[in-house]
Length: 443
Image (cartoon, rainbow, N blue to C red; front, side):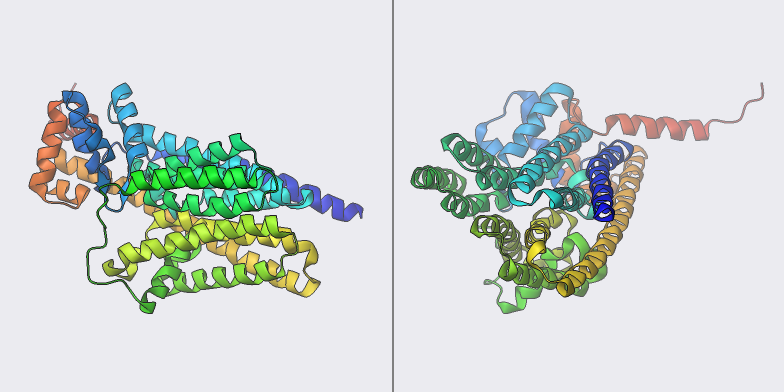
């Protein structure tokens, strides 16, 4: 008994250390690899910046649709930072860091409300490792992806708040989080769907909660869809041939670096594992509902991504920012495993332990590859700024994946209002070039 207690204490301490250290590691990388250079979708903020500084900013510009999203919350975060200190991508990254800290805190409350005491810290450590995994390095490196992190924080908040015994104030708090997510990125709309079964599982204020939640969901969704244009551009809807694509999206937290087939296999195994654990779970309907809602959020988002991105080819399913939604499937699997552990026979337990070892290897591999990708991203942005310092404007097309003339106009407009993010980097590159060309003079 003493040996078992000792192992439990060691596990608890290791879990606490892991949950605390991984956010600090990501924060260190954010500062170390910060590059104040807009990339790809970040250039869509250029008109907002120019309008802000010229005094021509309108609400229509803030709520304008971007692909399938309405990035109102992200746009407001950008404008607040730009007004305070100018366009600063590191500041946007730090906002993302703060949002994920909120997500981690909400995850702890979720774990406390659904998991036996002796298994809380190990489960919380697993969730933290997925939440801060460098498999989703783009959501740490790109300021524009702050909307994805708003949705992650809101999803954990909705799950945590509605998993408890609810009252009207909790319903309103969860609805506020869902509203922010809806107007941060398109996947936030699905939070309204997972709120319904969570409210139904509560004995108190069930009817009132359903009425309030449904009314707010209808109002916010109607506002989201007003003037909405479908982002699905090519042909009809994908058929069953798109199922591997959806599974590949679900496999991104672990298998994205193993290629399309590897990610499909990981996603399929995760779905099967969730199904088996859901059948075997004896923790009660409320716990099963909470983790099922988390899995639904991941699977439904993978379906929406498939509908809008399938035509771009299989490699598009492996984008690292999709790990932000797919991780909820793995969180659900871990949550059900922790809840069902006491009712699982010794043989299946060893199978779960073996699966855990494989998952740990996959997560480590994903972290290593994600770290390397982030490193290469930083190097590429530095090289492009140096090319711009040499007046090689072809680098602008790489930065924005758009017509060079359009990017040149946006960069010129930003420079005119003194809000070009990489202006200091340009000066530094030009100064370094002049120093290298300076002839050697004897003392």
